[in-house]
Amino acid sequence: MSSYRQPGVVLTDRHFTVPLDHTDPGGEQIELFGREAVARGKAGDDLPWLVYLEGGPGFGARRFVGTEAWLGRAVEEFRVLLLDQRGTGLSTPANRQTLPLRGGPREQADYLAHFRSDNIVRDCELIRPQLTGGAPWTVLGQSFGGFCAVHYLSAAPEGLKAVLITGGLPLLDAHADDVYRAAYPRIERKVAAHYARYPQDVERVREIAAYLAEHRPESAGHRLTPEGFQSLGIMLGSGNGSHQLHYLLENAFVRTPLGIELSDTFQEAMRTANSFAGHPLYALMHEAIYGQGKQPTGWAAERVRAEFPQFDVATALAGDGPVLLTGETIHPWHFEVDPALRPLRETAELLASRTDWPELYDPERLAANQVPVAAAVYHDDMYVDTEHALRTAASIRGLRTWVTNEFEHDGLRAGGPRVLDRLLALVRDDV
Image (cartoon, rainbow, N blue to C red; front, side):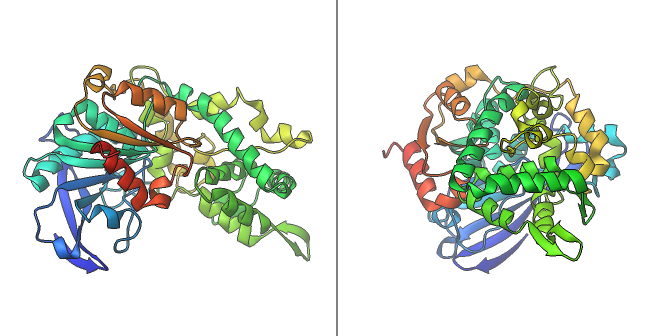
């Protein structure tokens, strides 16, 4: 354990050992990492704890510098643990380099089956007494971190003083098919709004998609395809994503001695945006987080996409309509074009076909909830369906919602202290 200072905060790096399988506490152990943050003038104070669960799945906790964003508000009254969930960041990372240590694809898939919200919450409950002396703590869950928080309310509410959720209320009884059946129309609306804002991008997107369909270039081993280009639509789910996408598109082509070509600038930007090298669990576990019971997820986003033919690139290019972008969906082809995922293709197939996922939510326990809960629901959220979120909110006793269209899915990052202030006020009945 080591401590050091940044502007306004004292940081302490903490390491914990937890079972891979919590039903076998004496079995294989893995290491978790969390970074404690406390205000410089309060390092020695007896403060309540707040644990932050990042969105994803597959992302380590954000690496703040000093008191930026919402952390500055949090350390005014909390000692904060920024936890790298298992398999992410410095918590026994799972990726193409490390997973072969488990064995072949079957062993890798069985290993990763332990990396969902149920075991993330069990990790938290094992860590909590070590830090709080047994006192309950407050959980702040962003996106998938909110999914984890709802499981926490189902499985171990005794460990919770309060729960704050931003853009992360899951549908309790949905199959992954239901999630994506609701997602594609939302994505289409976001694309339509982008094209209304930047009508020049309609033809630009068609030109890029047509070029990629004909040439199929590679950038640093990453195959650039029309479908991969479409997935840049994920940018439209953030507050300034539409503007960022527009700027990315304007650099698409350059004139060369061989004619008009896709620019190195654009190819590198597309490769970077599409690469899962830094967060492979997002691709591997993205549909598994919805798995419950014996029905496999079965590449839900790919199957459901067939119900929305307007997203087919070839069809769009053959006509005169716009090429629609996608986002927040994972497909089998991701494991063919991305060198960070290619070695994990069979592992992904095994996870997609798995039929023994534990149930994640307890509706009866949630209906009897006693823990103060507040949730920011973003009215135009591209990643988490608003109707689904509100249905779940109504199923959790005492949960108070703040429904706003001021922010997109990244409201906690964009709104910072104001979003956290609002949620804290809600759980304290101050509004």
